[in-house]
Image (cartoon, each protein chain N blue to C red):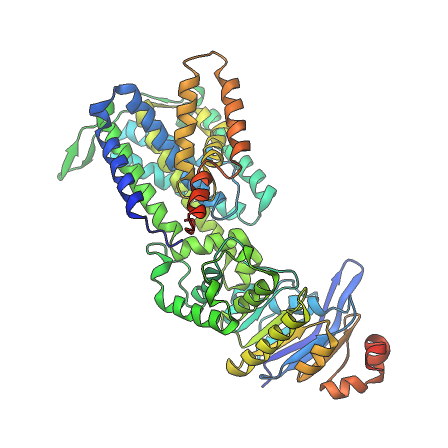
Length: 323
Length: 250
């Protein structure tokens, strides 16, 4: 429960990171592109799970902040070709949006919170469609460059090739994963989990519950914003569907597949989400149907997510499962 | 100065008057039991004092300071605490973490996001001391949700005293326990009240336990104060016997 990795897990993780770092040399462009999408969904899902698995708040509107991050980053890059500025701007704008909408949302819990976030998410979707001057309407923003990573006068690194941009996505995703791991095992993480278990008990333990829910909501918004900001230079475009509720469903599904009570659950879920889809689509045009059946089977077979399988093994061996 | 003053407090739920112009004064150091038949307003009184519900009228003072409009967590920081009639613990957290949270909250450490909670060594040592007091230190790494009902009641008592309250309300702390477990919990309450100098107010249905444990008994009936006094005096009070105690003390 302390959050420390066993030597075996640390070694496995080191091998995985090394393999990811060598991927552009070992695999073609498509696997690199696919892994970038997995990493982006993993970041998106980790933020979502801070809210859902750790704080007990189910948001159906995270795509709103994903889109704010994507549009803000895209817009900045179209005016100022500086990737650092674009990504930072995307994350910050999504964070501000989450803070403002969070103030209104975290007054409520359970289904009322979920419906409110869904409504706010769809409001952002409408804005993306209708505010043509800023968002480009149904055309979206096109021609977003993979601008160089630079601090003028200090350094400038070109990342216009997909392999170069891959390292930006990988590095930021790793930083986001490590930061989240640190957060959920910190006193703040413990406080959020206590709120999830019993907000009344937490309040009577001296915790200002609403304030902490807002903190979790804002951090989840920052993660969604980072994921969105990473997507727009990858695709060179942003269109309104990124704000649609079906985009909000992706981290929900990935997290449920991987497991809400395991730190790695959303990451494993993101891998499953894309890998299963990528395999099926090669064999049948009815891939969505088959995909749905597989997802239903996985959710029914592992009600607490695929990671619960490993948790059970560790419990069987007499070890306390990690958070 | 009294520790707690409740002044003409009233609470309606629709047409039902749960607490009706009730006034009370509690000095520090006295173990008080609040008794009364179902619907007398015992739990509502706790809810009003601790901030779980707002009164329609009246005022609550803690050490002379008005706390009527304060948020719950501010009241906890000012020295109030409580347990609940229905079990209320952090079921997925370990026993140690259940105690650690209020300790961290009192120390202002809950917002720390950049180090592991395991590095909060002083808070952990303090939490373990509380677990030793309530006899749960052996199971500190067990998820609280899998403890026996009796141990969960002890844990709830531990969570209630962890904020270091001056005044702690216990709402039926021995509910659902066997007679042996009940004796253990109530003896523990007495011990903690002496050792920590915590003033306890207990709502309890076991009259034998109440009369054996309490220094002072407050009797409520239909949201009003029916009587108050030391156990011997309450036992002899005609109005109390008629309304509530009946055959039990006859």
